[in-house]
Image (tube, rainbow, N blue to C red; front, side, top):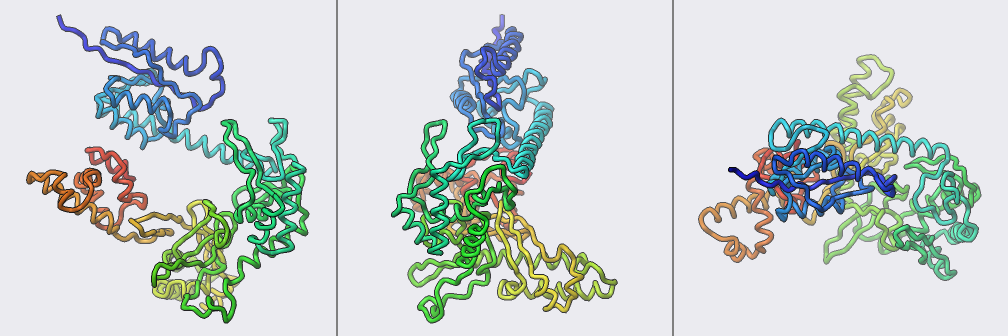
Amino acid sequence: MSLTRKIRCAIYTRKSSEEGLDQDFNSLDAQHEACAACIASQKHEGWKLLPTRYDDGGKSGGTLERPALQQLLADIKAGLIDMVVVYKIDRLTRSLADFARLVDQFEEADCSFVSVTQAFNTSSSMGRLTLNVLLSFAQFEREVTAERIRDKIAASKKKGLWMGGVPPLGYDAHPDPNRRELVVNDAEAETVRRVFDSYDELECLNAVMRQSEAEGLISKRHVFSTGRVQGGRPFSRGQIYHILRNPTYLGRIRHKDKSFPGQHAAIIEQRQWDRVQDKLEAAAMRRRGGAGSERATSATPTAPLLGKLRDETGDILTPSHTQKGRQRHHYYVSNRLISGKPDPTGWRLPAKALEKAVASAIANHLQLAARYHQVLTRANALQSSAASDRVHSLAHDIENGGMKVATAFLKSGAITDGRLQLHLAPDALAKQQGLPGVDLHETLCTIDVPFTIRRRGVEMKIVAGEMQTTPDATLIRALKNAHDWVTQMKAGTSVKHIAAATSISESYITRIIPMAFLSPRIQQAILSGSHPAELTLETIARSKIPMDWSAQEHLFGFA
C-alpha cells in the first residue's frame, strides 16, 4: 500500500486598508476560511493545514515589505512549508517584478503556489502564463487606483482643501475630521510673522536663523500616532527658507509648482509676501564674491548656469566648489545649502556633468525641431527649410561648444520629479538666427525631458533626455574579473586562494562571480553601455541572480 506524501500548506491573507479589521469576522478571516476549505477538500492528496497564520492587515500589495509575508518567506526558506495557498493572486502581490522574485524563492525551496479562486499553479508553463496575465491586470488596477487618487488630490487642492499631512507651522488641522481645512494656531502664527519680519529687516537667512535662535523661536512640534516626536527645535536655515517660500501663509494651497486660493485664513499680508519674495530673488541672483575680492580674482571658471536653474522647491541652484589638495571640484547646489545646515531635499550636482546634460538636452531638442520643421509656425516651404537649416547649425555649435554657446539662449529651467524643464529665450534665439520672433513654433522654446542621476563607483553620472550612454568601466571590470575567477575555479583554484592572490575579500568575490552567468544580452549591454541606468554594480551584487536568462533580464529591467 502506497502512502500519500504530506503536503504542508500555509495560508497567506492580506487586506490593503485597516477598515473593518476590528470586526469579529473580517476580510482576513473570510480569506482564511475559504483557503482552509480548499485545503480540506484536498485531504486525500495529502494536503495538511499548518496552524500558523500569516495575516497582513492594512498592507499594500505594491511592496514585499510586509511582516507576515517576510515571516512566510523565512519559513519557506527554512523548509517548513510545501505549499502556499491564497484566496486570489493579488493578495500575494500586485507587481510583476515582485512576483518573479517570489516564484524564484518558491522554486528554490521546492514550494508550490495555489490560488483558491483561480485554477492554476506554478508548476507548469501555462500556469505561469496565466499568473502573469492576472498580475498584469492586478498591477494595472493598482496603478489606475493610484492615478485616480492623485487626480482627486489635485482636484481637491484646486478647491483650496487641505489634503492631510503634518500642518505647517502656524496652522492646525480642523478639529472636525470631515472638514479639510486648516485653522490658525495663534501662538505659532506669531512665530511665522516674526520670521517674515526678521527677513524683511535683515535680508539674510543666516542672520534670521541666529536671531530666531536668540529669541527662542522653535519649529512646529508634532507627535505622530506611533509616539514619535518631530520638531520643537531651533530653526535651520533650510526651514526658514521653506517658511518664507510657503504660499500657505498667504492663504493658498500649493500643489506641485502651482498654488490655489485656500479655505483657510492668511497669516502674512500680500504686500509683505511680495516684498520678501523680491528680496529672496535678489539674494539668490547675487554673485557670491564681489569685484576685486580674492574669490573674484581666483582661477574659478565662470558658471554658465548661474541664475538659470531652480530645484523643486523654487530654490535657485548656486555655483559652489570643494578643494581636495590642488584639485578643485565644482558643483551646483540648492542655495539653502550654501551656508545653512544639511537639508536632505537640497541638490548638490557636479557642475561639469550638469552643464553637459543641459547643453545636450538643448542641442537634441533643436535638432529634432529642425528635422521635423517645427521652427516656424507660419512659413512657406522655402522659409521653413532655411530656418530649419539655421537651427540645425546652432544645435551642432552647441554640441561642440557646450554651455559656452547654449547659455545665451537659456532663459530659465527647473529640476523636478525626475524631469529637466528648460525654457529658451525666444528673443535671443530669433535675433541670433535671423528668425521672425513672432512666428517661432510654440514648442521650440520649451524643453521637458527625463532627468536621472546614477553613480558609477565614486563618479556621478547625469542623464538628461535621450543622451547616449557610455560603458560603465566599473561594471566592465567586474564582469571581466568574474569570468577570470570562474576560469580559475574550473582549473581547481579555490575562492580562498583567489582572494589571497588578488587581495580581495572572499565575500566580494562570491558576490561578483555570478556575473559570469548573466545572459548574453545583459553582458553585451554592459560592454556597450546600453544597459538601463539603474543597473549598477551595487544592484547586481545585492541581487539574487536567477539562473534563467529571461528571469535575469526581467529582474534587471531588460524585459
